[in-house]
Length: 121
Image (spheres, rainbow, N blue to C red):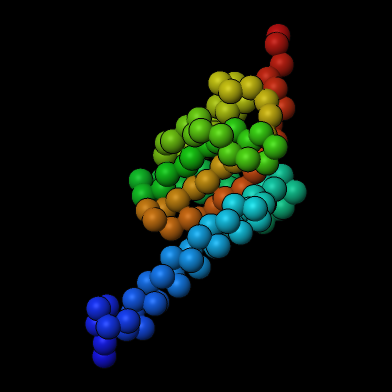
């Protein structure tokens, strides 16, 4: 056991952790994990449909517009509902969107969808 006053490993560990965190932040900002494409995966499409139909008040859906595969500010935060994709199409127009669904703190689904613009009649 040592103290911070006598150059104990804990003091060096704190400095080392701070340096590691700085490097980790720099690396993670350069190598962003890509969001899986829901449109290209039957498994993700089925999971999205099941979660949108589930009447669980613990679920929260977040919708973001994607520009160059990067999320912008959230467009929508709500309980999941069956007409979500139609709602996005009618209220926000076409384009690429990220959909995140959480059950409390647990991420249930994260993916991107491409939605065609609504047609004028």
